[in-house]
Each structure stands twice: as structure tokens, then as C-alpha cells.
Length: 156
Image (cartoon, rainbow, N blue to C red):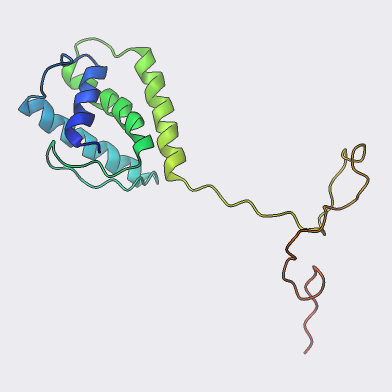
């Protein structure tokens, strides 16, 4: 179970703003919480909803899918780096943050379910060399229709 404290500590380690064995001081903790909430609210505002709930202390649990943690760490590191670093952040971290953001988007956006192809759809051109059928095969479960795959005209 990931907490806000471990996520913020990992982000600070990414930008080498804190030694690996050090604890997060009060200023860095408050800044980390502020920017973490701000970043997640911004993602939610553009449609990347991960189930995140606001954190108020380092002990609060991060309520997102475990696959989102690394992307959050990398992007939080980019968000807080101007506060704690006098030098530019590495291009590697920027690339990792972009990859992490893509992962956050994939987790947040549901993919549409696959639906079977109807037997009344033509296969298309270019497929004749391996399949002589003109239409897709009938499905195991028939599509519920009014009139054999076609909608019948309504009578008055």
C-alpha cells in the first residue's frame, strides 16, 4: 500500500533533492502534498480520472491503481523540481515522465469492448487470395434483428 510520504520521497529522490536514507522535512512534505494534489486535480480536469482522493498528510494512502504509481512519481518529480533544484532536470526524467503520463492515460481511459463482425458485412478488397467468401462468417451467437440481419420497414 503506497502512502503520500513514500510517493513524495521517491519523487524527491528522482531529482536528487534528498539523500536516499533521509526523511522528508516539513517544508518538502507540505510542498510535495500541495503539488501532488494539484497535479492529480489537473489530470482529473482533463479526463484522466484514476480514483485519486485528496491527501492531507504523508501517512494518507494513495488511492490509485498500483500501475499508476511510477507515472505519478516521475511527473511529481518534474512538478517539484524547480523548487528544490538549482540545475535543469535530466532529459531522461522528462522522457520517463512522458511515458508515465501515457500509462496514466491508458489506465484511466476504458478501451471499448470488441464486438463480433456481422455476417452481412463484406470482407473488402484485397482479401480474395486467401478467402473466397464475400462476407464474414456467421457468428456463433446470432445478432438479434427483426428480419435476418436487416431491419424490416415498419407498416402503418
